[in-house]
Image (cartoon, rainbow, N blue to C red; front, side, top):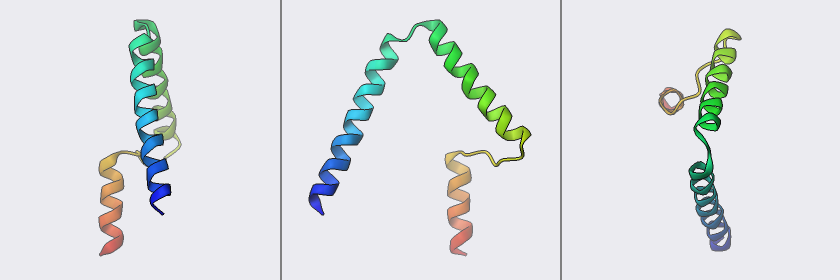
Length: 67
């Protein structure tokens, strides 16, 4: 069981390092394009009637289930 937790921790740390390394090499245009893509994705999901997937919405669902 501890091996599983060690692997999860290692994978998490590696993905954080990779994200930090990639974000420093992105140009202004790439960052702008990624932001526009995220906004387009959210607009599409909203137009189809999907719920907004945010931390607060997930937290609210969690507390509603317990009551």
